[in-house]
Every structure is written in structure tokens, then in C-alpha cells.
Image (cartoon, rainbow, N blue to C red; front, side, top):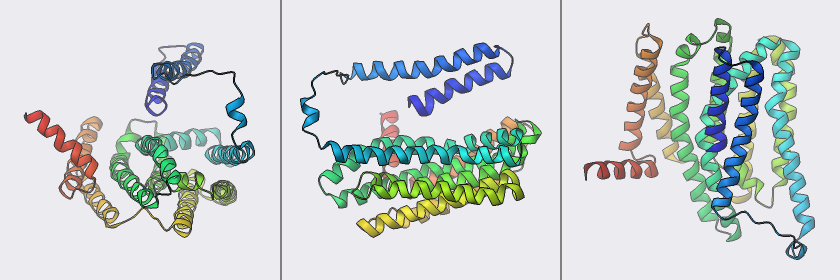
Length: 340
């Protein structure tokens, strides 16, 4: 919540204040640093409030731990994180090399818009990680399979709604931005599709990273980095930022497909069932309904009506078919509480 919502909200407010010339650049820098520091302080206070902040100078408990395996695992995880950072920034460096900084600005803005899809998935993953650890500890693969499908289903339900909502309203988004940002239209499509597939494949990366085959996660990250560089080297000079978006979709799609395949190969579990197909069908129908709605001159009216129609059709379909029992239970409980 603090990282995915409060930090983004605070950063957005700082940017808007500077954009509308309400603050100077120096004030913007101080506010930006202040927002990040505030998040750290909030997390520290929360840990203290939970009574989980402990400092001990005793080293004896550490000596009982298997240090060498811990260091080896930490190094693999560290290298994997470095690869992930490279993946997230290398395309922007290559765009600045082959295009210009203006193209980088358009591309990074479109990436941030599309990454909204990941907010719910990131929260679900943080909740799922302790459960994954427990299932490994107890060798409960049946529970792991159930969690794998449950996370995939919830991610698809929320991700599909955000995807079709963003793409159906992409014209409204660009109406609020300078004209040059329209060049990033298909970047949003490709990145949204890549993020949605990432969500749909669920916790495959977390399962691999916490398993005995954790080395494969580093392999996939390195492979992703290499493929991103090679593909962008070909596509960006020819197709600009749209080419970079297509590479983003293709490479992430390939890596997630390989992760799903490896998890199935090693542990015989996978995240999909008939529910996945039904969710996609309802999402397509809801999108078509929103896309067929005539465009209104007032951008905000168009945004509200189109988003409302899509949400009603999509949400009704999900609830009637009970494709997300957890959400249906919450909705039913809300209605009972409201009527009581």
C-alpha cells in the first residue's frame, strides 16, 4: 500500500504542482525526497507498532544457521534483482540512443500508464509469498496448486478490467496529454498485454525463486535481459518506440511462458482452467460494449460513461458466473450488511 499507492500518489502530486508552476524545481526536489523519506518513516512506525522491531547484539543464533547456502541463495537473488533493474531501464537507454530524449519521455509515460495494471497483482503477491513458503515447508503441493490458480484467477479478474478500461479510454488519455504523446498509443497496448499475461501466469516466478530450482529464476532474468537488448537493437531503429513496446510484449510473454512450463515440468502444477477462458470472454464482451459507445466531445463525460458501462457489464458477468468466489463473497457480505 505504501509503495504502490502512497508513494505514487505523493510523487504524482509533486509532479502536478511543478507542472502547473505552483512550486519551483528546488521545492519539487525537496518534496520528492520528503515523500520517499515519509514512506520510510511510516513503515518504521508500523513495524514498531506491530512490535516486530528487534535489535540484538547476540550472534549465537546466527552461527547455528547454514550460512553458506544462505549466502549462495542471496547472491543468486541479488544477481536476479540486478538483471530485473537492467530489464526495466535498458529499453529507455536504447531509445535515447536511437531516437531522442523526447521519445524516451513519451515511452516512459506510456510504460507508467500501463503499469497501473500491476498494482493489485503486487499486493496479492505480497500476501501469497508467506503461504508459498508454508507450502514448501510442509511439502503441500495440493495447496500450492490451489493457491497458484487462485492468484491467477484474481489477477486475471482485476487485470482484465484495468486492461480493457485503459485501452477503451486511450483516446481520452491522449486528449489530456500533449499531441506528441499519441505516438505511444500502441506502446500502451503492448505493455498492457504483457503485464496482463504476467498477472495471468500468477506466482510462477515466486514458486521458482523459493524452490530448490531457484537458480532458474536468475537464468530467466539474464535471458530476458539479453533478448531485450538484441530485439530492441533491431526493432527500435526501424519502428521507434512502438517497436520497443512490441519487444516488451514478446520477451515478457516468452519468459512467462517458459516459467509456466518449467513449474509444470518440475512440479506438475499450472495456473489455468476453464475459469480463465470465461474471464477473457467476459472481458472481450465488456470491451466491445465500451468501444461501440459513441465518442462524446467532453473528455471527462466520455471517460465516466465508457468506464461505467465497461465496469457494469464486466462486473455483472464476473459476479453472475461466480468467476471470483472471493470477490462474490465480499460483494454478498456488503449487500447483507447494507440491507440489515
